[in-house]
Amino acid sequence: MPYVSDSIGTKFERVVQERFSELGRSQGGNLPDFYHSNGFYVEAKVGNIEWGPRVKTYQIDDFRGISEPVVYAMGFHNFDYAIRKLSGKPEPERQRTLDREFNVLEVLFISNNLVEKIWKKENRFSKEGPTEYCMFKHSLANALFKGTFRRFGKKEKPKTYYGFSPKEYYFFKHDYKGITWRAVLHKRKDRKVINFLRKAGIWDASGVIVQ
Picture (cartoon, rainbow, N blue to C red):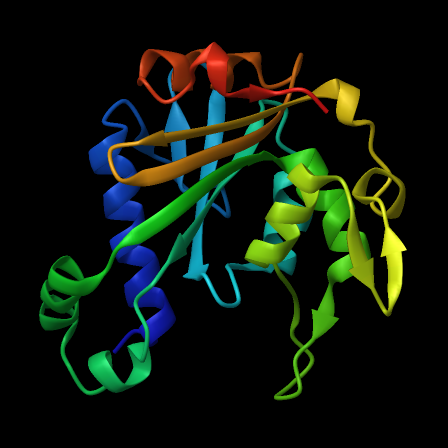
């Protein structure tokens, strides 16, 4: 039986594919979840809005070698008490429960190269074993847009703390069909992804935020 987190991930992947029918499942190896025929990949990650999705080591290591653009679709949901609601149920029943009660509040499309920079500062090892991971918290997403946050009692700027130039990225926010869509995408490298979101009705010029 899959872990509860795997079942929630499967549900979010269904949400993404239903919303973006042009995305196809990637074939073979540790590739991102989806591939678009225009030449880019999308990795779908989801977590409760209280703590966010978890990025894993293999994703950082394996995605680095992909020549085509890779972006993450970081989802944030409000499906609380997931273990209590889903444990002990077979996968089809879990998915039916999620279909009734799972709601995506926000999705952030973010460049893989920026996730790598965040990983270098935020990766941790779990207490249960030598598993390296990075929690992409909703507060971290907010900090990228706000341009400032506090870390260990000290005021920091994301551009300095993570080592990137905001001028190289588009920052975008748009509420569309009950979901807040945000993006931090490289102006040049992620042009195909931006065009894809524009065609899907997500990206609108009025939502671009000047940093």
